[in-house]
Length: 154
Image 1 (tube, helix red, strand yellow):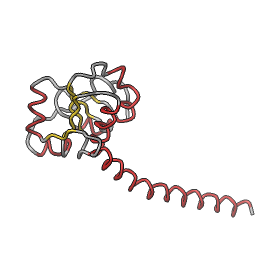
Image 2: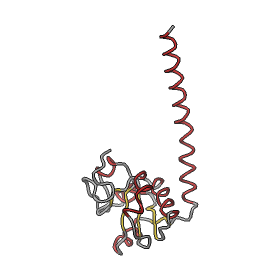
Image 3: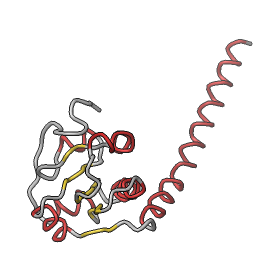
Image 4: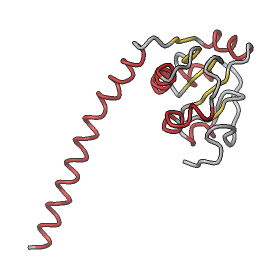
């Protein structure tokens, strides 16, 4: 009897977790759509290069393994969860220009919107994200994080 109880509990948990996974997908898509409607400024690779030349702070909001595998030269690793909670400490100047990117643009859009809501005035999201940057033949660095997320692994 105890064995069947355990099996039923495990099956119930698996079903519940799978429902959460399926429910989260549209929410994520909806969050990206909402972020793009909050007034963020999206820029292409050429415009991003101009912002960088003018001194924009580059924020990579991807995961640790993505950053280490390759990132825009000079980018600060600022994973989404950390950025949301540490922006005031690590990015005290709300007047500076910030270029945000992720892999394809979705997480970057959400992070850009969050920074705008926190009062940062000059925030730009790289349209197409790191994929657009690397596919256009722009330089890429590999290696450990510098800046905000430095020292945090995975």
